[in-house]
Length: 196
Image 1: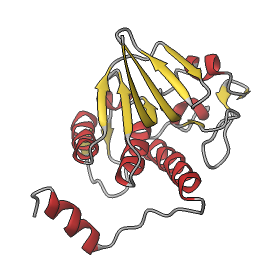
Image 2: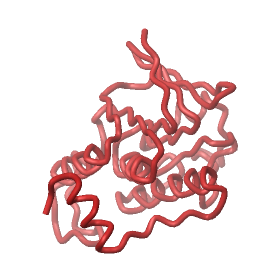
Image 3: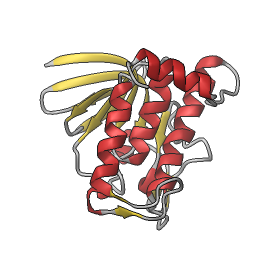
Image 4: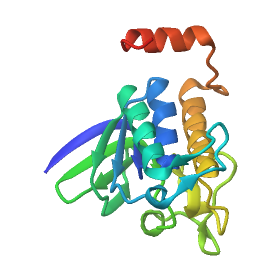
């Protein structure tokens, strides 16, 4: 069994997980995203996602994954079956490998078993978090449907992922961090990637 060390472990590759992975990787933190490719988005059609008139959920996910990949996130299709806190952060195990990170973002939809085994506090049936999405375990974040009883919308989940990422980045920078790009930033990024 091999082990990969990274800054941020993201468990789950739906809108919340991919949003978190994109923000932290884009801003200099090495990120591994572990995903089973079983997101609810594969059954969805988006009419209510700001900025998107109408798109099939599978097509949306393909675009989101390409975007995350273009920033260099190490996206791996694997199920995490064990997650523990360590002296240096967190360790996630799949059937064949293990991954270590200083931070972990849980984005596993309504599946809350990893949060429970990690020892996160719950409020009723949902993981207890504040506006930063940080759980009762320092540097462990929970996002999307696992922290909400009924508000299971893709755009809310993506926002939760972004909130977790911005809090991680704020901790790393030692001050409130804002991810705000201007057109020149986009030109620089896409120009370096060979885009228009």
